[in-house]
Length: 287
Image (cartoon, rainbow, N blue to C red; front, side, top):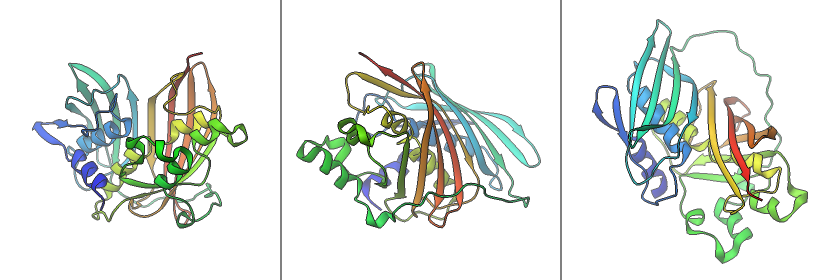
């Protein structure tokens, strides 16, 4: 397990400060704002701490309300909305400076048998081992000018099948509203189904907005562009491991009125659909 993944697992281990109230912190890299996947992962951990062990999270629906301040802790309050015989519902509010920065509703379900089918098909893509690593890809784009935050150790090994936004910014022929990327946590993880789901919630926010930007030749770091996640929804269909290769297939069906929509499907290496994701983001071009 690399150091970045160890630090992420530490960030996800929230401090309980009162019944149904938890405190989380941010990494010390002092980004301009807290990464959305971090808040989503921590909020899901807070919700799960109030749910019986026999129930598994099957969906979450979240709104990003204000930018998170990475210099101060985040307080998570959990409302026990419902405890039914099969389903449990929780609402989480993340607070900083006395104001809500994020809200999430999460639903948990006692595993039970039922009808089963899969209509989704995993895209035919190269194996992850045949693709360059994130750092290799970044060096090929920026050379020695790569920002240290982008080129340092990361908790996930990400292997892009499709162009990255910085590549499409330079070459219009690469612009498309689709992204396929292989993901795998950088180390062996415990056999805790919740941990693997929380890590996928964290990683799911990395590239969805990129899929919208990719269609327009926009990329992070441009002074003329502002982007931020607005809302985020996930459905967890079957158990999976975040320390094994997962294909994150994403597409953006539409953008307009300073917003863009992106959808994602997470497949196991054997082609089983494990997670579905939808996100809307604000995209402002400052011409």
